Length: 201
Image (cartoon, rainbow, N blue to C red; front, top):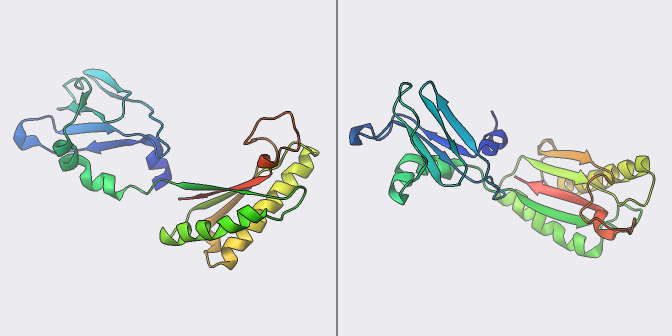
């Protein structure tokens, strides 16, 4: 399982810990996703089940014959003792940049051109090998055209990143056409939908 899939679970599990203190050995802690969203997880065995729905809460399980405990909030000291190294090993939160384009072109606006050094600096600081470049279009044209131009926009950004020294194998390109507008508008030429979103993980 790669780091991205692991983060989607947003759960840390501590095994054979605190046994000397007489506390249940298995602990499950629920964390928020990198974007702040909090999911939920069920801890189930033959003796019962408990659901975690709040970030920072945990469940203890002594063994397969004991039902999971009720959710509780761990002290900072216990959280650090159980999960400190694992939490510090998690990847940093992804950083997203939105680059805009002149109408019907693959030419970045002046403001977006000025943002490129920040994109590059973030990728280099993180030594990133996982960059998503996703092209989008406004709803002004035929959808086949929109898919094509959004792909070409994404490819143009990819080439700029590679030219600046980022490894090509770490950059993934996708095209969404007008399917995922940033701004829902009655104006089919909405300029904020002519964009490429760059996510640096």
